Length: 118
Ligand SMILES: [Zn+2]
Image 1 (cartoon, rainbow, N blue to C red):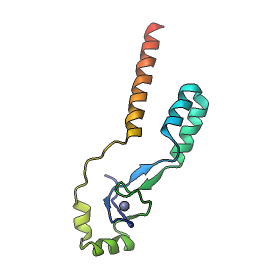
Image 2: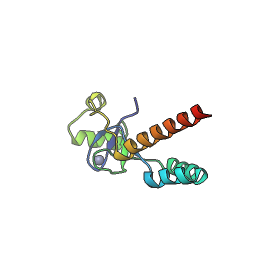
Image 3: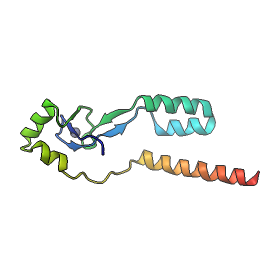
């Protein structure tokens, strides 16, 4: 389990959502048209990974057990133990991730078909 964080903007407690810069569609198009720019673009995107709050999209996520995290918790009237054991809602996949799964599935099926014909 990943370490719990607290959002200093909205007070959301839980794991962060990892966001990347760039556009998933551009990435897919680059991969389909030219493999090399696709690889470069993917590398650039994964290197620009940053954490955001799944609730408000803020980027000010701080560890729960940090002094500021503890202060926000106190403002909410919660103890560190309560926050640590609090259940998180199930993760929801974004449209981009769904699209990525579909594209990967299509590429895998296409490759299998291709190799079967050789
Ligand atoms: Zn937030």
